[in-house]
Image (cartoon, rainbow, N blue to C red; front, top):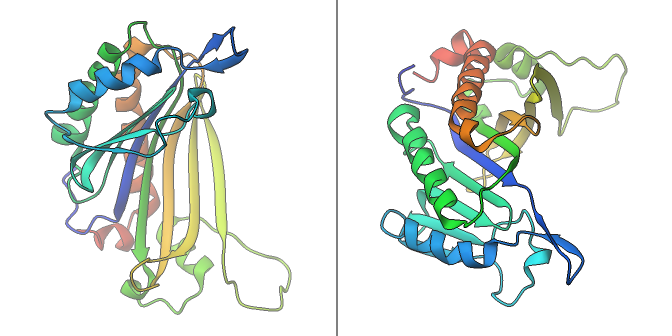
Length: 249
């Protein structure tokens, strides 16, 4: 699929979590290899991602930070793509401005996972994977009368009906659906309203994610993410098919 000229993409996020070890001295689960790996990872990514930001104080116990971001690595200050690392956690994030799957996000992810594996002395055992796309459009661009549920039904093929009188106009909403895809994977779709930070413009926001927390192996990560991308792409095209999709060209 060609890159859409007016793509609604706000952010794409790949997230990996791996199993923690057990610290018998403190009797806590924690990422036992993180203390050494964080320095190695910083050196490995420095040429490609020279801007570093630490989000937590250096003296904070690692046991309190499990599966939370500690380090961010940017191409330049606040310039995507972005790599994030914490005990038991890695993510790669990008935005519409730079995002191209075949020549950008996927090869960068291959490199990123290679750096991550090299940074740790022991092999990592994945326990959670998530590939998530966040899309949004401004309501005023579509000349809608402001009926959220009609707009969602027309644009995203999702129909929600209330068979009661709430006594007022719909102000906020969130539709959350999950679908079992087999082999432990799950498709998650969330549709909600929001507002643009700059001018408070009303937004329609939808997130499409493929998640897996079973039957995971490090050697299969790239194959998994390619399949997850194919699924999210199919869902995006199917949900937006028609005039809504054409408006992104």
